[in-house]
Image (cartoon, rainbow, N blue to C red; front, side, top):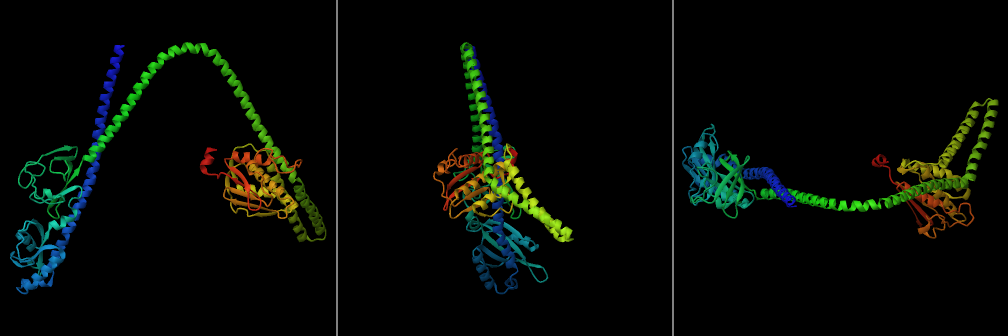
Length: 579
């Protein structure tokens, strides 16, 4: 017993260790994936910040170029209108938020300036580059300590010789004002590896150490910092204050257009949190699975012990269960036979209802067939007479009429034959418009006999539904016949058939339904006892047929009489596949 218990403990410890290793692997993989996503997002944010800074400085570069082409510049270089040029420079600086605008000669001497106080920026290198015909730029600090960025544009004379340079200085504090504090932390270092522009003001003028990554405050005091690499990513661990992440992904983007390097610090806490959640989910699932497996094993062991005790009891009850099983089989066979007999009875009942409807229509149909027969005989005699009189055109006209009569009789006989056929096939695709047309044609003789006016607008295109053509025809013949029976003796006899997609409504002007809730019960009828059509099975049979096709049939009292609605299931591709 102790050996078995020790083995189970060892299995549990080994499983827990395996789960821990799997969770660690998932954490590492998830962390790498999250870092890749953070890197892509951070690179996008850094590119956006870099483009924004470059675009904002671009205004001052274009300003320097535009001012260099101003007509006032030539007069100042000639030693005239200096005060007017300074007033112009001051007006332009105030309107464009430029820190200063200066005009120098080719030697770098300042000829005119928008501000009286010096900016403190060494413009000599910028002017030398401008005198060479190129655009010069650089950064520095003003006399008041403000961070500035300057552009120097060359001034050309009529012979394209450089006569001087226009230097436009921009205050970087005004540029970075609208994005201070945004995420992620972004800073731009100049050629001296000094933080010159940033959205975190606390690291302005921090310097890159000569011996490695990171930043050192301007006063030289070192703050907590460490860095390590994970794959192709560099992560900084910092203790630089509440507005900078403690663990950040370091991204770099060179900006040669302004002579700086853009850098971003993206907080990796969300990546760690996501990796931890993934590892915890995997560990929880594995532990839950292991617990369930352990419980199942213990339960199986317990059940095995109980099974040995139950086998003896099972043996003693086998004989009784065998007798019960045999009895249940006999009952199942009897029930299947009863269901089969019921199905046959339902089919026979439907066929009997169909034949009953044919009996009701027989008088009208015999008249429909007898009338064309007599007409055929008359037209045949006329054709013979016309042929004897050598009038082939009149004879041909009579023969055409005989052909039309024959086609009419054939159509009536075809509908009768289809209606009388016994259909046992499953639901197929049926054209509802054709079924209604056949039902109306079968019942039209009786409509004329009972003087019933038909209000029916046949559909102009097929309406495909799920059903059986013969059985659906029986449903509509029953409903139309019942409507005509209900209107016998009424002053107004109008039968209205409305088709709306797979829905058909049959309305009459009869007395209505006395008990609508019982109208589909077997043997329920409102007709007189002893009437040939008063068995009360037609609507019950119709209800069963429509239900077998997955549809529904309902009856209610409308504004003028009874109203029956047949809702059929539309035929679609997936229904065809299922059938």
